[in-house]
Length: 350
Image 1 (cartoon, rainbow, N blue to C red):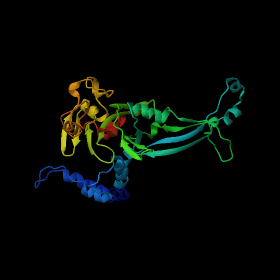
Image 2: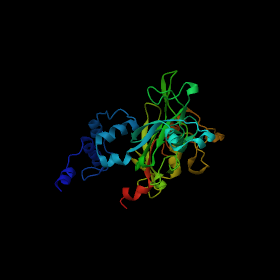
Image 3: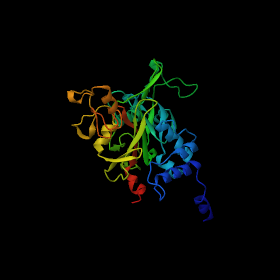
Image 4: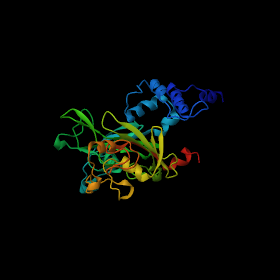
């Protein structure tokens, strides 16, 4: 088919060509040994300065549209719905008296807007939290707008205000093949005008089950709501500065994890991953690096002297220091990537 042939031979975007150049720079040739590669060409193509640190999530939002490759962007494309829905008070005695025509008129009024996404941004609170509980709050616990509190909803221009639910709904058929979660770890202080990073603990599961969070109809299998963790982007440092590195499970069908810190690639146990990625202190005696309360009763673990504090936040590569993971007290997960389990055979060409 001539049309298909033309489509297959269409030119690729400059950003995709630059990405190809980046991967090529990672490959050793007869004239040079393997290196950490260079992203200068890619950065110039995207119009960003390679010598100024970019926010990882903002770069992602810039990168995907510029690459303009639907086979990649479709993997991350999902949607949820924002809604405002009227609350109708139902009296049991009156309900029995309603006829069918009246029941039709009692359907709650609502306003729904579809929101496409390439990733979901999840707020991280100070203290101990989790990805699952935050997603549940975001998509199953709407705000209630009450007329009695001066905060009702007006369904139309000429109608009276009514009590209503205002929230967001995650749809099962809107879940992507690859689910990217952005952990919003930065807070703004309105009194001081300063932004700072939240390094407190936020746990996340190896297996993420969204079946009790995403809405589904009878045609969709709830097993499609199960995701497996594949990779984590770590931010080490404070707001406006720092260093990014990653933990990746290249083959999600195994439990083999690696830390990619610039040109240094290190095999790691999953317990090391979460001790570095959760944020906060680590209770080493508990399974898989669960978060501690922040107290440290062992005097030998106390850090004394400015040099030890400096080294504890550096990339020592020697495991946890002072109750923290590889990156020290300022390291924590910034982005998570999950793979839809039902699509692993297709994505891994089984």
